[in-house]
Length: 284
Image (cartoon, rainbow, N blue to C red; front, side, top):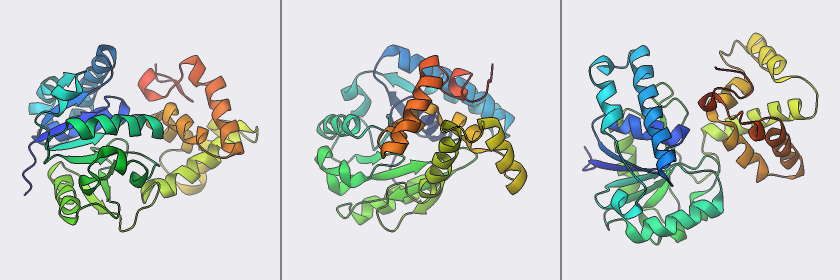
């Protein structure tokens, strides 16, 4: 059993709110930080929605404690306050390298000397961030799949500088917060899951962006032909189109054209996925 009791989540967005709620649901004291009060209030609403989903999905004891968990997560826009008692920090901010590097400089300066430092980056290498923390020996990646209470993999990936004891502690902590730990044995952008998922979703976006098929028909083809429960665009709506846009924007010329298509046809119109009620599909 680890000594971790206090968890700090940086980023109260779609996945960050799930990480915070899952940790709180399994008994950890959780503080969530985000950039302003509006972002935090949106996070609080996500916690309340998650409480309902945990109950509907029959998570153990959810009918007893799920709503209390949603209200008991502490919220703050003050980084120093968020970090003062942190045993572990999990950063789940937008997939923009420069933003993460800048944020980790601040976290590294403010976090206590014992704090384990984790990024949930979907596709970036922790080695591209580690030196900005000032503490590469206790910095690593800890990655979650969307809908963490159901798809509860916790991929743990260090760098060549990550202390082995720190790595092992995060693997054990993943179990304590209801995840299935997946140690990634060598550093790999995209870990195991996204090394499989991102090319799949990128291929689907390219087919739609360049006019080969509609998102609906691409999803239909995939589901009928493979028996999969969701198509790529249904998955993208869950992940959030902003994440897909950030990943595509950092790619080659073809990927950047896909990013421009996403921006013009969806993001600029406020269609960001399930979280906003509409993405490739409407959820209103």
